[in-house]
Amino acid sequence: MSEMIYDLAVVGGGPGGCTAGLYGARAGLKTLVLEKLAAGGQMADSPLIENYPGFPEGLDGYSLGDLMRQGAERAGAEFRYAQLTGADLTGEVKHLQTDSGEVLARAVVLAPGASPRPLGLPNEKELIGRGMGYCAACDGMLYRGKTVVVVGGGNTAVGDALHLAKLCQKVYLVHRRDELRAPAPNVKALESSGVEIVWNARPAELVQGEDGRLCALKVQDVHTGEIRELACDGVFAAIGRVPDTQLFRDQVHCDKAGYFEADETTRTNLPGVFAVGDARAKAVRQVVTATADGAVAVHFAQEYLAGVEK
Image (cartoon, rainbow, N blue to C red):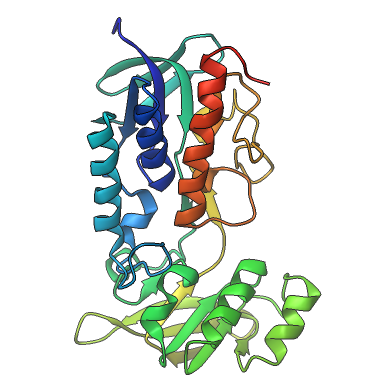
C-alpha cells in the first residue's frame, strides 16, 4: 500500500478532470489525475471543436485535451495512466484501487464522463470522425450545407435536428415510433424547421463510400421491414448517453439514469467527494461546462480540506 496521501485525487482526465487538476495544483494541493487512456476523454474523439473559447479557428479534441493536460502538469499536477478497479470514498481518507496500485487522497473529484449510446451497427466505430457522430453541437459545423441524419426521438434528438437545420441543406430525423418524446414546444418548432421525419424506422446499416467515409444510412420500417436508403454526409446518434458511474453507485447517490447527484457546488452526498463533467446530473453537457465544473469543485474541495465546508 502506498503511504503517500494526496490532498486531491481526480478520477478522469477529460476537460473537467484536467481543469480540476490545474486548479488543484495552482491552489497548492498535492494533486493526482487518474486517467485510463489519454487526456481529453470523450472530447478526444471529436475531429473539430469550434465552440470552446480562445480557439477561433477551432481545434481537434485530442489536441485540446493534450493542451489541457500540459497546463495542469505545468502547474504541478501529476498524471497517472491507470484503470480504476475499486474505491472506498466513505472515510476521511479516500481509497482508490487501480491496476497499478492503491491511491490515497483526502478529497476526490469524480470526472469519469459519459459515453454516447451507440447505434450498435457493425462498422459504427470505424466511421467515427468519418461521418458518424454523437454531438451535433460539437461537430455540426463540419456539415454546413450538407445532408445529415439524426437518430432518436427525445429532446436531445429534436434539439440536435433543430440545431443542424440552421446549418445543413437537408436534415432527416429517424425515430422508431410514430410520436416524438420531446416537449411540445420543441416538436412545434421542428414542424416548421424543414426537418424531414422518418417515422417508425430504425437504423439498419451505415453505408461506407469508396473514400472510406459514410455516404448513406439504411433504415428499416419497424412494421413492414421495408428498407429505405437515406443518402447523407453524416449521421448523429441521439439515443442517450451512459454515465460511467457504475463503480461508485453503491456509495455516491445517482439519479435514475445513473448520473451523479451533485448540484452547482459539485458536492455529492459524501463529504470530500465532488462530481464534475458529463457524469454529473445537469442540463447542459459541453466542454465549457465541464471545465467550469472542475474549477468549482476545487473551490469547494479547498473549503472541505480547510475544515470550513458549509
